[in-house]
Image (cartoon, rainbow, N blue to C red; front, side, top):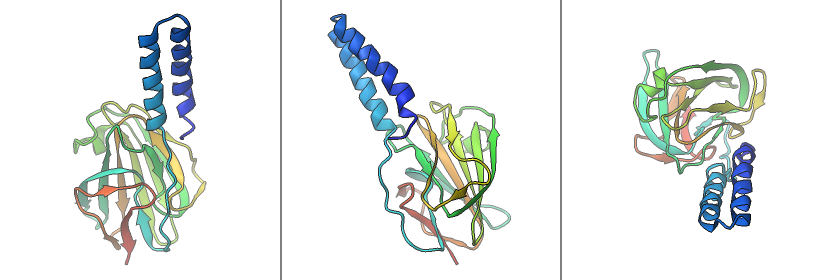
Length: 200
């Protein structure tokens, strides 16, 4: 499980015990179910990272909702995470975290196209051996906290954990022109193990 689970789960579990002691079984069961869901939400399953130096893997679990070619030839792939998806985020390439920018914003529903532009987000610029990739952790209507566990200057391995978005969200990854995209809109992807593209 992701380390953030404890600050949410422990207080709910304590309430569960207190309600049980106070002979309030219904409230105790509700708290137990809530604690179980919190543990489920913050799960961090082991992933097999595909080998190969030229691969770009998905930074998140979810559904590809948009693939946009930018004027400079780069491509942005948008992945929507519903509340039942794994919410830890991973580095799409091996490299160095060159820049981490936090941007305040709104909390539109994450599948809205405007979310990438106006919602609260972390913008991570990762420079690898072959090129530079930009990852955006974007908050949604319910997810109002984007968390990055890394700092500028850190070295990252492809598929390494980099952060978390709480309770429903969106992750955008922008790759350079020479990356051949291997996913399409509607595809389900898994963070760290699904290949989004390959350097030509």
